Length: 492
Image (cartoon, rainbow, N blue to C red; front, side, top):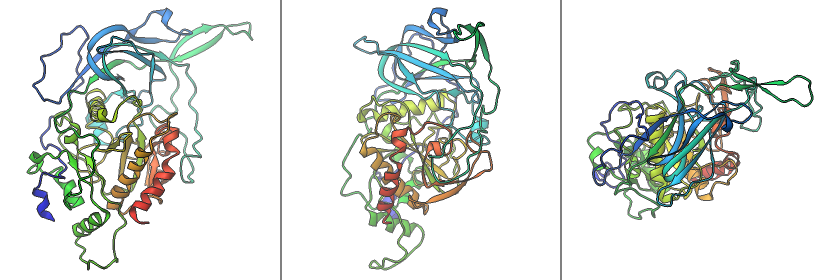
C-alpha cells in the first residue's frame, strides 16, 4: 500500500514553500488597477479602504456612524470590516450594499455579522502573539461587484452581564464571561434624547467604534484549472493509507504531485489502512480489534480549491490528538452556488490572513451546501492541525465550517450528512466516539475561564465553548442528527 504514495491520485498536497504574513494591502479606490495576472493564475487581491464619519443626517439617534458613500472600486466578491485592536469588539451594526458587475444594479442593504472575535487563535498561542492581528467582522460573500457603500453604526452601550447557555451541551456549570472585553466598562459618547415619561431628557451612552475601521474588499482570483466541483467518487480509487495521504501534505518531495482531490475509501479500506499504519496484523476473516472509524470521505484539497500557499505562514502547528470537533457556520450568507465554493473559500482564506492577520485559514475543514468537503488549514487532513476556530478550545480539536449562514435558514441535508461523514472518519482516526463526551480544558473564553475543565460533546457547536450565535440556531439543532449518523458510519 505504501507504493500508492508515489501516485498523484489521492495525494493531499500543501506547498512546502511559503512567505511570511504581510500586512493588508492599502489600495484606495482611486488607485489604478495593477497589471493583469498571468493567464491561468489563481491569486486575487485585497482592497483596504479607511472609513470616515458620515454626515449627521445619516446617524440614528445621535449614534456615531462611520462608512463610505457609493463609490467605484476594483472588482471584488467578498466584504468585511477590520480595525486596529484585535481585543476590541464592535458593538453596533454594519451594513453594506454593493453594485453587481455587468448589470450595474445595487443590492439592498445587507447586514454583516459583527461577532467574529471568537473565531481566533487562543489567547496565549504564538499565532496570536506573533502575527499582526486585527479585529474583524465575519466576511460576507456578495458575488462579482464593482461598487460599494457601507455604514457602521454604534449601538447603545450596555453593562457587561452573564449569559444563560443551559441549552448548549452536556451539563456543566458555566462561568461568568471572562474573555476579551468581558467585565470592562463601556466607553462612548453621550447624547440627549427625548424622554416622554420624565421632565428631564434621558441620557443614552453609545459604545465607541473601534479605532482604525477599514473596509476590506476581496477578489478571490480566477478558478484554477484543477478546481473541483461536485464529482462522483472514483470506483477505482486506490487504497491509499489515510495516514499516508495526510503525511504527503507536508512532504516536500510529494508537493509537486499536487492532486486536487483525496478520493473516498470504503469502510473496509479505511479500517485496514488505519490498522496497517498502527502496525496491527490480523487475519482477513477476523473482526477482532477493528477500529471504530467511518469510511474516508472525498476531500477537495487546498490545491483543488486554489489556495495561494504564498499567503500563509510557512510552518505548521500540531496538537497531540483530536478529541472533539467544533461545528461552525461561516456567516458569509447563502447566496453562493456550490460551483463558487472554491472561490468563496479563497476569499475567506485571504480575509483571514491578509485582512485579519491570521497565519492561515482558521477552519480545519469546510463543507458547502451540496455536501462537498474541503481541506482547510494546511498541515495534513488526518493530522491534528491546530486551527483558529474556537477561542479557548483550539487545542486537540478540529474546526468544521459549513459555508453559509444558518441562524434562520435550515442547513441542507447534504451538508449535515457531510459533517457526519467527516467526523466519523476524522474522530475515528483518533479514537473519538461521535455520540460521546470529553473533558477539555479551556484556554480562556468569554464562557469559561482559562484552566476550567469543561465536559463537551465530542461533536459540539461553536456556542458550546464560547458565548456566540455560531453555528446558527438551525444548524445547531441538527447536531444531534449528525452525531447519530456519524456514530453509525463508524459502526457503533
